[in-house]
Amino acid sequence: MTPQPANIPILKADATVLPPAVLENLSARFRPGGLFLVVLRQDGSFAYHDAGAGVFFDRYVFPLLKASDPTGRALRERFESLAAATAAVAGGNAGGGSPAGAVASASAPGVAVWELPGVWFAAFPHVEKRQAQGFILLAAKAASFSLGEDVLRTCGQLGLDGLWLLKQSEELPGYGEEAIRRQGRLLASTLRDQVRLTGLENELNSLSGQLANTYEELSLIYQVSSGMKINRRASDFFKQACLDVLEVMNVRGMGVTLNADISNRPEPALYGPMTLDQPDAIAPGFHIFWGSKVGWFEPKDDLPRHEKFRPDTRGLERTEPPA
Image (cartoon, rainbow, N blue to C red; front, side):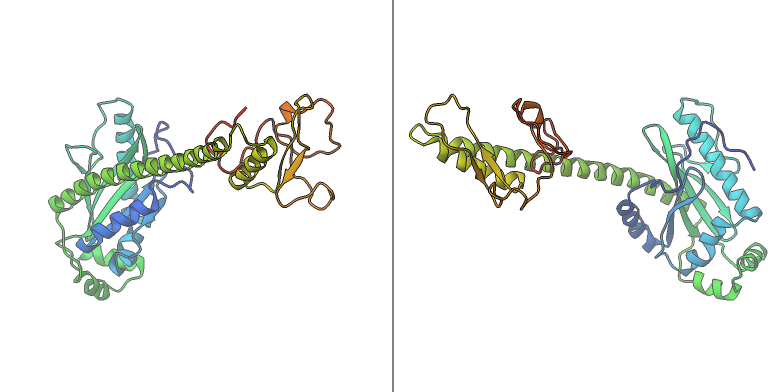
């Protein structure tokens, strides 16, 4: 077996080549045409296969891909050759050739096709940011499928009854070399559109979240600023401001105290479902605005101390807390 080139990135066994929703959508589109979708990682392990394609693919084609006999080894060598060619193209090496024994498409992304006993395959690499992430494989029953010597030998290796497999294959359309190549090109084009749409959807969701958070902050600013009236007492204004902030920040209590130099200074006040009369009734969990505390305040505890707001404060996601 040809050793794998060192410049081909190897993904971890638990890596996901494509989002599951994209793969399920692609499978649903190509399954009615008697086609079987399989996704492999760069290391050759299986990341996905269409479990609803039918018993012919589940009992014959998929085990054929995993077989360790000469047929399975030949298939893996084709993938290694395709991986090497992909790495050469991604690295700017125009001299990379087509996989041995495979018929490659002249158009991107380079669909290679080949035949194994009773089955045609079309495969191409999935590349993101000039790095091969895995391989997309499309399988179909060959139009010439019959219980010939190669198919019977493969059935024996897989422990299948030939006549039963022939009966299952009658429900599927047959494909030739050109037909499976066209389907491979169509899958490559559809995949690019699906990945692009998924990326746009994620960006839209992110933007929607940011707008929702911004709206909540602006709403709070409007509520607080609307209470700034010349004829309103300071204690009334700060009470309403604390109550408004409590709803946004989801804290148990909020208080206010003014500098002693201010004339007609109201008494310190605390709002919310907590009390200062029984400090042990509700234990504090952390300190905020530690960087701007008064010098004489030195609590005797080891609670977390945040320079400003607590990092996960609701309503302040992806924003810089006010100074």
